[in-house]
Amino acid sequence: MKQVHPNWWLAAALLVLYPFPANDFFTVQIGAYSLILGTIALSLMILAGYGGMVSLSQLTAAGLAAYMVPILGTNTQGVLGFGWSYWFTLPVAVLTAALFSALVGLIAVRNSGIYMIMITLAVAVSVFFFTRQNYEIFNGFTGYSGIEAPKPFGLDLRAPIPFYYLCLIVAVTFVLTTLYTARTPFGLSLQAVRDNPRRASALGYSVPAVRISAFFLAGIIAGVGGIMLVFLNGRISPGTIGVDVVIDILVIAVVGGLRHPIGPFLGALAFVLLENFAIDLIDRERFNTVIGGAFLLIVLFSPDGLLGLWGRLKPQIGLASMTTKRGSQSSGLDIEPNSLKGRLSNENV
Amino acid sequence: MDRTDALSRLQSAGQYALELEAVNRHFGALVALADINLAVKAGERRAVLGSNGAGKTTLFNAVTGDFLVTTGRIRFYGEDVTTLPAHERIRRGLRRTYQISLLFETLSVRDNLFIACRGISPRRGSLRRSGPSDPDVEMAEILAQAVHLEDTLDDIVGTLSYGQQRQLEIGMSLAGAPRFILFDEPAAGLSPSERKDLIEILDALPSHIGYVIIEHDMDVALRVAVSVSMMHNGRIIKEGTPSEIENDPEIQELYLGSRHG
Ligand SMILES: Nc1ncnc2c1ncn2[C@@H]1O[C@H](COP(=O)(O)OP(=O)(O)O)[C@@H](O)[C@H]1O
Ligand SMILES: [Mg+2]
Image 1 (tube, rainbow over the protein chains, first blue to last red):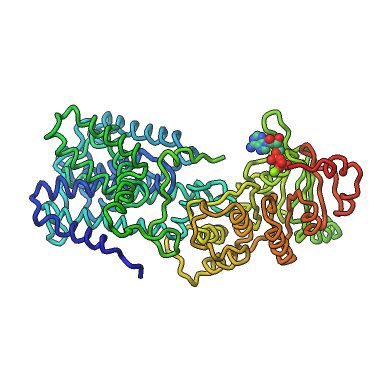
Image 2: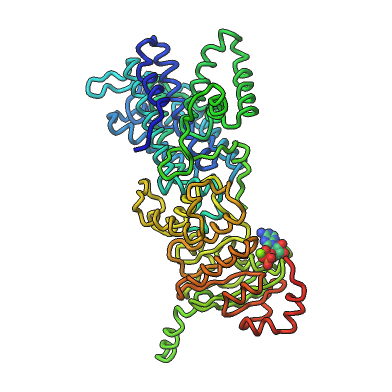
């Protein structure tokens, strides 16, 4: 068993104890919401960080899973609503997101860099307009509302603290799964394809197959994130998957850092805090300017995002190394601090 | 087909590891490979010589499927692989090294070799970690030993010296029971002692494993090959034993006289 650094235990304790001093607003709107946005951004981080593929369709995958909840289950809009139990609805919703994500992968993987970004953005925009214009399935502009989390075994997931813990369990599970998977043969092949797709195929790997599989797995994470999001908001409409939110998720992932699956959660927390409290300092209209400015500063001064910033400040404030030694067979994190810029030029020649 | 035909087909089946039939490859107006006919027997060790730009690397790229040929046929152990993607050809036992190292630079030496070993296994997409007793993990260490990288197993490949990267390039091509290997200037940039190691590795390959080696250094080429093909301007202009090639006046003028690159 690998030694776990004390900082991780400290972080775990903070996350577990957090809802007790916090009020409902902080528990749900800051805590749970950060975990959910982080989960969705993790889907993007996995593709970008381990696979060198920046996909802007991951929020869309999350949104489709969210739509499946009122469509397959029940809703108060009188549109579709098959009345399935949550035990069927939720797995099918996740599968929908995973298949959608894999489909995006299928369309996009033969392109790299900026072209993949454009294709996945185009898919996101198309789905957004489709949901807005389609009333038979997506109930158009209004979407669905009045959606509630289930109460499995009498546990009320609508209450702030249980819901926070649900989001925490989901987030921690996916972070650990990601760290584990990165060191499996599949995870290594994904990083191999990122580093050098031509060599990977000269070793027997089907590059498209590796990439599409990664899209599928990332879609599962996005799907679960989408379900948490619809439980939190109680509603889903085209606005949830609009281009502005797509960009937010990209900003969260990049600002947090693409080197380690914890990055998207740092990015999400910073984003949610800014979103809620920057308003006190500046007016609503300037919020996007602040986010954009913060994005620019981070990308300019720390290409590895907040994670990289932490890595650089750490020695100066005298903390022991938190990162595991890279390269060893047992290590969990294994991503080279490539800047996003570096990844985008990772062309297949 | 009568019985005599059948018997001769039986005899020739599997005799050739590699057969190229009228292979052409164009890059726009440039004819990089012109009507290449080449047959290399299983277990045969062949050197390909030729000046820079003769089309040697392009020949390798065509054989491994790094890109498709413009016209012509390629057979690997009798099977037509002309339109197969590269990874399918590799899974059939073909391997190669690259003239300019193509490695997974952000991963460790161990990971690079493990990835190479696992690539030809159906468990290449496994979502379970491989323990230390996994055959591919063990083979990665054996390969590292063979190319003198055992002390750098956990180093990130991007931090290795040029010579070490060349060694790794060779190590990766030996992974997973190859049937036939293409070496693209493996000795380029190696020190004399590393060259000796390379020759040792080539000599140690089981006799059923044939290879084609592109090599400018005549001493190395003659030492490790039993036959030689000479390329010029995208064509194979001569084939023969090393001594025939060495003593051919045309070749001496074309190539040996003006050794470059
Ligand atoms: N991918 C490519 N695109 C365009 N031209 C190429 C490409 N690869 C090789 N060539 C050209 O084909 C010719 C043969 O190149 P190459 O096979 O690399 O020669 P060699 O390996 O014998 O030095 C050269 O003129 C080279 O410029
Ligand atoms: Mg060459």
